[in-house]
Image (cartoon, rainbow, N blue to C red; front, side, top):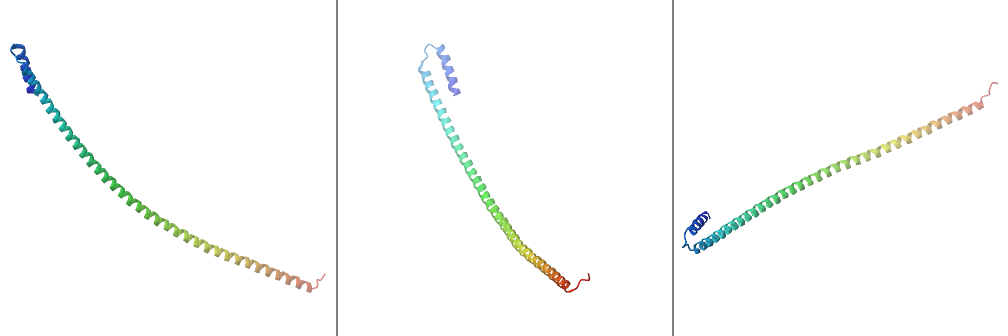
Length: 149
């Protein structure tokens, strides 16, 4: 392109100084300018298309990498979720076992308390019966004795 501009400058100077100058030489040069601009445009278009293709390839690689990273993250999350599920089930079973043991202990304590209560009531009744018998004997034996007064 610089050579064409240099040649155009030369022809322009020649056209100013030479009365027999043929204007068709400038027209030929202008066609060369036009061809050179089309070549430049085509080269830029080709470069643009190559850059677009490279960008699309880069985008595809980035998408593939992102998909891979997301798959790995989801797989890790699934493993974590399964592990947490197992641990929570294990803890639940432990708590259920402790609850069942506490329930059985409570029932045993209830039976022991009921038995102790029954024995206490039985002992109280026996004591009251014995006291009543003793009082009855005492009243009965006092009735047989003559009072000295």
